[in-house]
Every structure is written in structure tokens, then in C-alpha cells.
Length: 224
Image 1 (cartoon, rainbow, N blue to C red):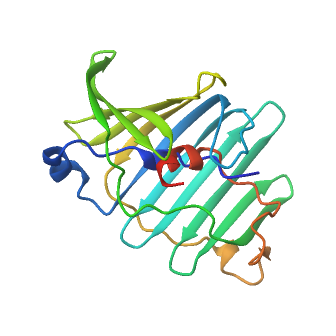
Image 2 (cartoon, rainbow, N blue to C red):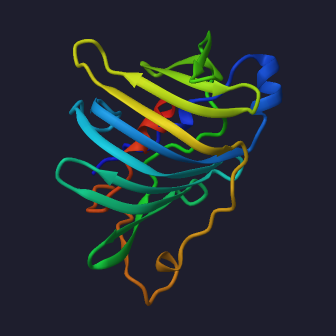
């Protein structure tokens, strides 16, 4: 399964003044829910995908590290797991959890770890979620277009959505919960560090059987 989860990283940067207040940060961490209908994601070879995903994402811009937890539902499967990515040694670890237990797979790093938030292309003005005011920001990067609902008062992502090209109708929506504009500490779980645990190594093959999060590509879309 290709990377599809990281759409979260695409989102933040407003104007110079707002950037000074909100976006001079070394990263962020948040919980999220993501829903895709006929979504076209960067490494899915143009094949539309429908899914629901819930999890967390933690990105450290300065240390170039990222951690993701994910629970993915599709029409025919459920995938539970964790992903840890480290730019320093160009390595990532994917933990998959099923009825047989947990396995950790070591792989070459094949997702980008951002060094900052992307630039906002346009500020489209305010809109309320119920009575809660947000600002609509547009981000256009690498041929993709995404709209983000942002809480200017608290410097927090609220939601994002992306439409496919008109020739291939589809939409992906991500909601952000308990957003914090700083990274949390990242460390590997024991299954990936203890030789007595179940560890697989695929240093020279990124096409392994490891199941990875779908939302990653949506969250990191501007960086692909």
C-alpha cells in the first residue's frame, strides 16, 4: 500500500505578520480524521481511492523526524499501525498490527519530511464553522490545490479539503483535533529496537508488504 496519509503538512502560512506570530515554530503535533471519496493521491498512480482514517501526526522540522499513528478503513479492510521517519539516516520504520500481533519493518525513507510550513497562495477570507470563526486559506503547490480552514486567534489548523480535477470528481477532507504548534518528543517503540522482537529489514526495497497510512500523502502533498 502506497503512502497516502500525510496531507496534514500542507497547510500553514498566512501573511508575513501572521507568519511571525504563528508559524515560526519547529513543528507541530495533532490528532486527525481523514475521509476520502475517489481521492487521487500523489503515489497512487492516478487510481481513485475511498477511505476513512483516524490517527495522529507529529512533525519536527528542526530534527527532521516524523511519527504517525493510523487506523484505516476501506470497503474491504482495516489497517492499524505506526510510522516513524528519520531524515538523518534516511530510514523509516512501519509497525503493522493485526490478529497475529505486531511487526516492525525497516525501510528506506520515501516520504518527504518538511522543514517548514508551505506558503499560502491566497487568503480567501473568513468563514464560520457553526459560530466558530476561521479563515479560508488556499495553498497551491506542485500542481495541487487545497483549501485550509485556519484559526487565526489560536494559531491552529481546523480542517482542510482538496478536490480532484473536474475530469475525475473526488474529494479528501481532513479534520484536526487538539492541534499544537510544537512537536512532541519522538522515539521508536521497543518492537523496532529490541532484537528479540519481530523486526523485518528491507533496506533496498521500498515496495514491501508493510501497510502505511493513507493520509500522509494528503498531509504532505505540497512536498511531493
